[in-house]
Length: 298
Image (cartoon, rainbow, N blue to C red; front, side, top):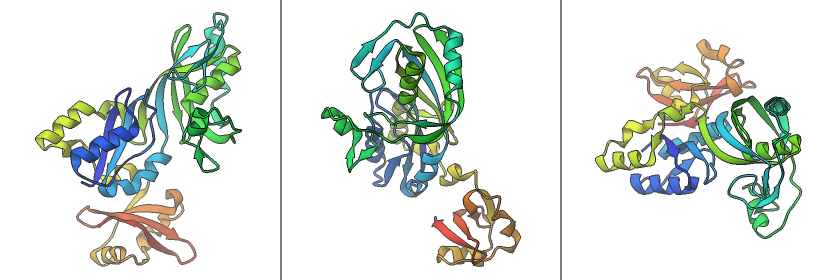
């Protein structure tokens, strides 16, 4: 039951409901998703099972890609189509070139304020809980990174964009901020996650197909190995003695691999035995000059 499923979440379902479904189908207690999708959103939702839940942090931190349809001239309290309309304006004066110029100002590292209807906590309480109580609080902006922001289709008052961004990016907030920049207001009409880390929508499995696979006992064909999400880390092969040290949680010197310490992201690497079995994640301790097990999968 150790692995990761690349599920294409349908509209109208919460991310938690998909996790609950996989938990019920698999009988595995340790199940979790890697990055919430709003109920209205569709697309890639990685769901980790068993020891796969121990690499969730890498998927959460990975870049994501989205396709979003934005409606100009409409502003809602949730920043998306599920919310209450609080303002309507005429967007007919906004041209395609104006829209694309506005997009340019949101590329790169920017500060973004989370929406009130979000799971961010304020004094121990979720913002969406406060919002439902009619309480609006000041939210601290966060630095995010938008690597790609392109107009894919222009059918006023609707504009479809593609976004590649860092973790913590709210596409709803991006839509709202675009509307403010253009002076006409805007809201997120539709959202599809195209990619989460190494998982792409063209390789995802639908919920009905996954349910069928569980009924027929061949669901493993949709399960990815745990180390799929760690391909950005350098890989090392260790001998049997070194593998035993890793299993016992001990530190070791990898003379042939010490050069990995600097180029490896976060001074980490993947360790395998000679049979190609994934052993775990090692972290380089520069003070000791040794590699220490960070997570062991034996």
